[in-house]
Length: 323
Ligand code: UD2
Image 1 (cartoon, rainbow, N blue to C red):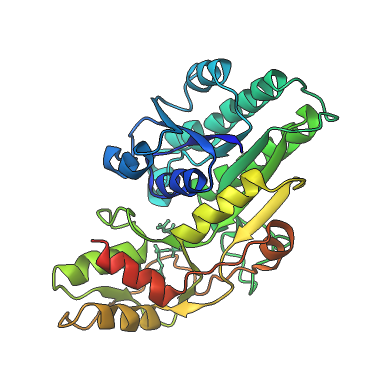
Image 2: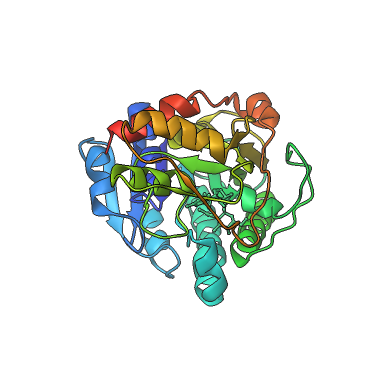
């Protein structure tokens, strides 16, 4: 069993990841400063004896250093981030601090943890593992369908650029200092605890919020645009596999379903879940919207043994009933 450090533990993906690790018998040390994470997201994890929580800023100079000094760490799952693409545009320095500088702190912590495990070279047998929350945003406006890990990266936001830069920082330094690195490029993640309150939140959390209030959701454009929606439960399982599968080499991996869903299809499924809710209305297309985004799940299956298992219908039903 591993002892896993999870940054961004109180966040949407982080809290589910802690629970997935704990359910499989691993020890978890969670870190979060509640900038966007929420205390209540930790409730389930905190019921486990093998969960410990440290409040702190991952980008700060001491938080991870102090933690790794006092605790044996086998793997780090780095999920703490500035998650809003529009905010990365209005606050580029904060984007750099939280989405790039924090990654370097994780590198330092991985080196320190490797030294504590008795080796810090490329020949160390049991390597410290780093799993990084990357994003399909690294592909930007690349129209290739499906996007594979070999597709050209063309970020079109500070957020996408920072995620790509962090991948490179981790892979280069992991190879030099002897810790293993898996960068997981999540596609459109949905599920319980996703914050619906910003106009830039994921479409599923926005639609559920509207329908619950018996208000019509707005479909931007004709609704023919498609996304690859993946359940947070599958993402949490992928994180766990990447952190604990023996012998996994360094690299990047899409975390997606490989199945496209149009906005019209999404609205139809949700309409069935909210009986009596109003039909969606169509609004102007969102400027800069990407028409289709779809990932290839092949590498995740081959290298991680990961296939998404939660169908959109099942995931949406659970989401609607959890609220
Ligand atoms: C991501 C970012 C977005 C922007 C975009 C750039 C998130 C949550 N979103 O959007 O901020 O940078 O990448 O490509 O990180 N939609 C509606 N009605 C709504 C909300 C959304 O029709 O009320 C549509 C939207 O136009 C899009 C689809 O739903 O076609 C998915 O939108 P999203 O923001 O959930 O995800 P994405 O990948 O387009």
